[in-house]
Image 1 (cartoon, rainbow, N blue to C red):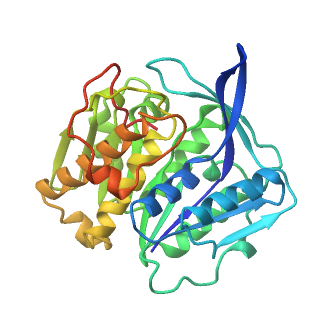
Image 2 (cartoon, rainbow, N blue to C red):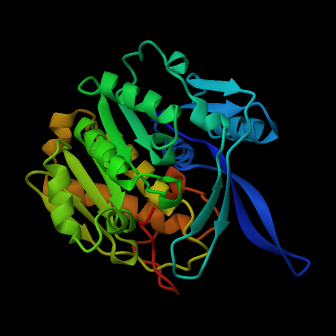
Length: 324
């Protein structure tokens, strides 16, 4: 089982209603999307986070249950649900306006964590702005430190600059998280903000030296780069009819984790020993999942049947995204 930790929120995505712009609520949040994506791919998944008891919180819980995500590690509180207004521009990454002050997701405390995970939990994923906003950020970092070396730890920082008040402090903390992680996925957009002007490959090598067994950089229309100490594989993007790119990076992450799990590569040593062919297969699967997500509105990751039946390269306007 993979336990996915972090925020669950409601994305408000734009639409047109009677000629006027309106916003439609969709369950979301990067870790939430990853949990749904993993479950849809047939791998046991649980979500660890704090939900509101308000209408949106109930919506989030119902979605997790409907998707088959285990609720064992969910906690609840009276705080409001976090909201994210999504602004979509053609061929650009979505822009988010977050409303997260005193919301339920960031109020996760040490007391909300399980004292121990059962043996079937062999992988734990951390991500996005849940690692930035206190007190939940410190709670999750403590869990990461506790489980380091005991289970495979994966990380997707999914950088949200508008929520980072002290970039230098964030970089220092991020380096600690990378050192505690076995699998790290980051987008080129994240790296451009973190290290302006530095080549992606040089940053990737530097991050890999901090301790991960596998580092993956997603590069939007240019595909992705995957690296271990011994292998380096780069895959191109795929052309699809883009509806929007919301959740594309989360689908990439969930497919990557599901493929590692399906191949029984659930220890740091086995991940580190991936052959070039195995790494290529894992990345290709993740790129296809990301591309399929771009063909529909909102963060809607593919099911296993959809992914296994997806064409190798669907021609059309726009390009697949492995961003996020």
